[in-house]
Image (cartoon, rainbow, N blue to C red; front, side):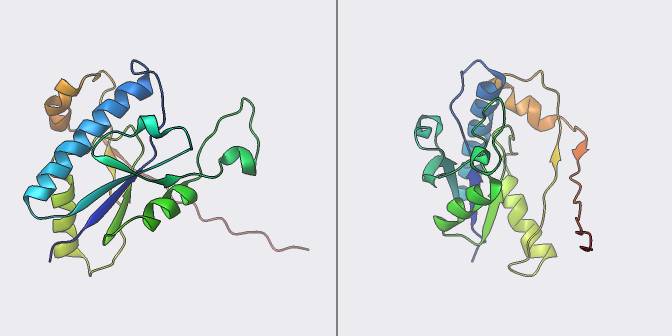
Length: 176
């Protein structure tokens, strides 16, 4: 039985011609293509959007509303200027709560995935890991000159350098 995925995203309204608006359009189209490819191969993929109340207008297919955020970073530590930034733990908790899958994926709204993204993940799981093993997938950074959905085939071909994430372990000091 093929592995199933739930891809969680956090879209937000923004002007269509803004940097975020352009990136979101490209992201949604890449997700649509990749989900279609996965379904053709019998791989189940759900795309769940977790948004602030009132931000539902930012949700586009193939994403479906998974739930609403009840708080932002402003509730934890007020910032100036005020920005309603979501908390990743809330996004993942709400998205996972609505999921019916084996693996959760989270990406920001400026990440375009390859057409075979989910089938490649399925292959990695089948060939390299035991079922249920968590793992990280690194992204490639490509030029920011791409601004149109029609450029996706060219974007897919760009090698781009890998973006590595550093994990910093914080060990609290002993209290005196």
